[in-house]
Image: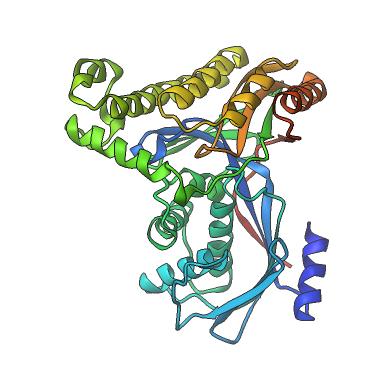
Length: 378
């Protein structure tokens, strides 16, 4: 992408860029809707990313062109207002939070291009946030560590954009490790790389259906989890064992109880999956992915007809160890663990089975784990 990003920058600004930023999306193997419950997740940074070419500016202003939206937009750093419009709000939110924390972000001009499908559940928004933070730190007189970057990005999502997400997306986009998934404790933010066995490839299965997190039931699910924790007198559902929950479930509304049961059992599955991968037990890890999907479908109720059809198609396909929906839900992508030697057969099977079931043509990405967000001097 380096040459094409340099050329894009030259076309827009009639000059050469000084820096290049690569910020990956992510796919979560398991641990869904556990992050905002201070639980465990197992994502990886993927080889699909947002790229930015930029140069510092002498003006106290941000000027950005997005080739994905064919828009050139900007704002002054000394007058940042939330207009609740367009992709630029993510950039404004990062800048506003940096200013609020007494950092002095320098102005820059840049171009952006992404091969991450928007709204597919691969965290294009977190990739954008981490890219902007890395750009600011690369050209300004301050630095931020991986955890600080992630916390800042999450704050922007929660307070500026209005999505009550957890911290997983930002943390893995900022701190991914090549050829590894990352076991993340979302309370302590402790990260432990988990090697992905060489005989496995990760398949991202895009249903081509989309959802809007801020307008979906995502925020409602978070409120239900908080209600369950408060009723059961714990700080978060992370603090409940399955045995303790079963003993006290009658204190909860049945639907709230279902939500809590998913989160508590999903934390257990996530810890077990990390162990299975370390033991090179792909069959065991695959079974846990299937259990996760069933729980998200039946207890948390964030799947969809398309996601269910995609998961079923994957499980019927050659070389599949396991599959499930991934991301916030209500549309987007599923993820599968696949035998690398049968990946072509798997892709062919899924395309045929999913199309036959839905009439839709899926997009299938075979991906490897990559390092997190980086800035390169040109």
